Length: 65
Image (cartoon, rainbow, N blue to C red):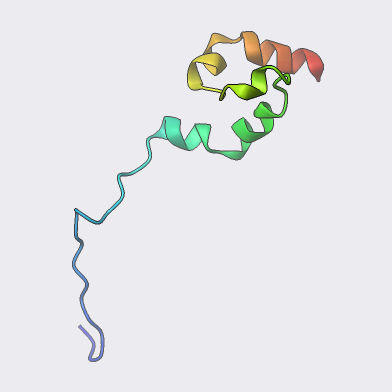
């Protein structure tokens, strides 16, 4: 180790758990864009993964395009 540098240890109790691929997808820009197609009455509820894999919601999005 070069002089003046400290070695920092990883503290598992302070580290954040890694996001799952599903979490990354649901927080990503594509899902954020798809949320803009929700109707006003649907905006009260959050879009979840099951609505995306169901296909009905995405079919509605594609029909609007």
